[in-house]
Image 1 (cartoon, rainbow, N blue to C red):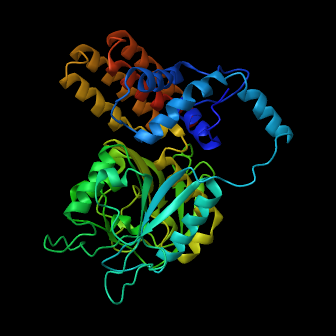
Image 2: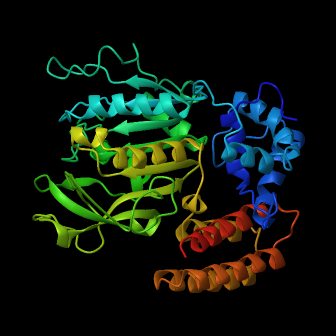
Image 3: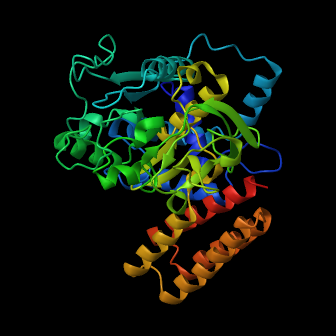
Length: 439
């Protein structure tokens, strides 16, 4: 039986961590999920002071999870029955959505201010009210002509320390232009040094980040920030606003699973200094044949939304959202909601944006640390390279099979008692899930 204080959102979050999909053909805890179970139990029982790793594990949240995790596992046989009751309509409707986690929306600008920032903030607050998160806003006046959102903004900067930012499951930057695109090192950036240190500490401690539209037109002189937003890709130009088509490259992510194969809409379409593809999971790609891309066109490789696991954080970005109409468009809002919830760790899907680059980098780090042999590293690299070739060719089922073989390499060549075993195996399984869901 679940603890009385356990709320529905927390249960959903734990089930997301375990990748639970109740069905008669699939056990409650499959092979891949058992590593998450092991990690949760280890966190709760064996390591009371365990530091946070990939996703948020605040001390308060950790206590909450530890209180509920055994109850959730114990409810394994109850979940399918509850699901059946819910489908039959026999469960009472919830009177209202309880706000179970906090999100910070940053709309502060010191350069050009997008007129849609207020609409974006309103929309995110409404999404939070309907989906279980509360929103605080940091959008102060920065000049007589840039008044921010005085009725909504916090009275002072929340970027005081990593521990102060710790209350937020994710931080959403909405078109936070700061005028540093000329790369003048003397130009003040959106966040000052103290604020940037706090933000970096928050990200490195497992925070979440979601960037909207001109979030890539900010802090151009801070390379770390453009890596956080995605692969060093910074805003460089845009043509006039017009209709265009995005090709959905990954429909398994919570921000794209509702989209058809192509997504046509009206917006302002950004060109970037480079494609972030090599280090992020591309979700949608602009088809430049469907609009006039102007002089700064990027060609066939023009990602517009993407996600990644950066340092210890989940990072998601969408280049859409310039127009005020975006924030009353239900399709775009569902895209935005999926990105916010995923970056907060509230939902899961598509292998959680694990990339080939991420697994290759992890393998190299483990080799350098002596946690994996050179022979095992070489064999694993061959399996991963072949799996990526198959994936790039659209042979996702074959890629998933090759990743299953790669998982076998991990099991065969890494000590199962080593933390590296579960860490690397979990990442390979995430890639396998991604490819399986792409079929």
